[in-house]
Image (tube, rainbow over all chains, first blue to last red; front, side):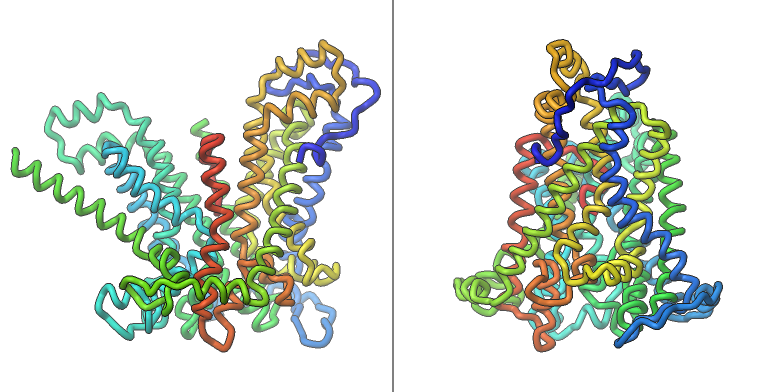
Length: 312
Length: 273
């Protein structure tokens, strides 16, 4: 990696520039021109594989571009008809609703509450206990997502799944009978570590003296949380909720567990986009939906960045 | 006061045990199924055997897909680290006009444009470039996707490299290239290592991009092969899938432990999203 990023040694150093203010101090003597050259390869790749696709989504979304078996028919612009189609598409409404359920259940409620609970109760436990619990939680988060998905497919399995033999419910096909609950539990399991770590560091900012005085005046645990702890970590709660909601809403792993089935019962927006585009071949329509997802992502991210800035 | 305290302690440990079980029990599968004669048969002591391991090693595509994964992810990790290092150094040390807007834009971009939201144009673009079924194409797409966040994280590290080191190198007449190679890169090594591991782990776990872009089974990386293993004949290949899952997890876990012990893992938003 060193050789790949080391630039060719220049013959003469750039003329010294005046003392710059702020963090930028060009002591290596790059100069604006060469600095731009350093940034260019990265910008080129980002432009080609992120910015251009994002813009192209807008364009494909207003065409009737279809994926046909033999050759692509040159698409024509059909205006906003893909968007009006989405307004009346029961399956899209279904996908939106399921995505909201998925985000609400697994991110806003599941990961948040479990993560906070863990951060709170592990705060003052013995190091051995703490390390064990944190270790399992983190492992769930580190494992590759495809592995975690199949681990849960096996866990939920009708015939040999651990869940059925634990609960004594042989023959229950969890992924078919309760697909959304399965997805919510799966995503809570795999994502809680992030919230736990974030809240662990947030809780360190709560002054111990305030906790102590809450205890002195006989506040209950719940009152302490609400009146002493929560005001200190409100920003973290909001940041965390926004971030994990964004990730969950864009998560493609429901596809690995259920493929959106049975009968569209777990078809979240990302899975729906895939099914419309590559199963149904309707590239135009699925791009319109992708663009709506991009807009939603943009709004959430702007709120998140504003929060980040205010705290800095 | 005393009985209340005891009850509370008991409740506390019951809660801890329940949560630990919730996280630990699903993992039993990855610990036992690979070595179980009849894998996936619920909670019981497995019939230990190494048959599955041999079956996995004999599987025509299992190890091959790991090689594909390695090829794709090493390329991605090196490219991300190299380009992000160049960009973040320039952005850290040179006052390029519009720099703050650029960084802000990068951060925004990395969370807004996701694989799922851009899958159609990426598929169409790679199709028209003739890069369908190309492992290099997959690495390119992943590199583009990871770069914004990588630059953003790495700039933090580079900002923290003391400028006085570079100044004294300059006093001794070092050229720009020498300063970068001999001063900045070695000092920024923890940051570079973190970014490299981060990029590797992220691309190792990425399912969607290779799933969209790779058609033939002999070019599939491990993440996609797992999908193929569940589709063979409509049922899960229970001999191969568990062992494969275990093998496929090892690099990620090892890298995580390595970085954690070496540099202490800094918790950047979305290390693995």
